[in-house]
Image (cartoon, rainbow, N blue to C red; front, side):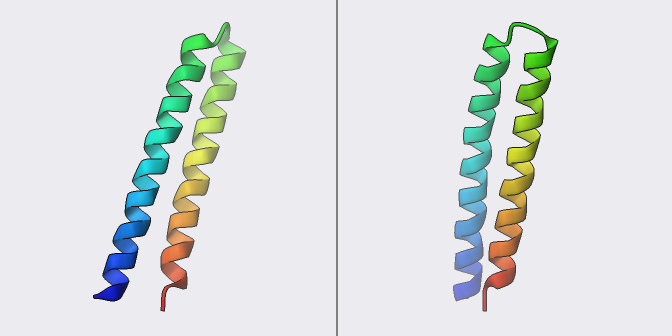
Length: 64
């Protein structure tokens, strides 16, 4: 039961991180002046989302 609670915490943190990344992504696209800036925003969003997912998965794997 304790492990399930910890996994839920990690999943909640992951969800919060994705929400934060989305807000940043939205703002970056909103102020982007050209396609290059939009592509940079997309790359950063995808990298952030990947790292957040990998970190969550690794944290879960490290649980006893």
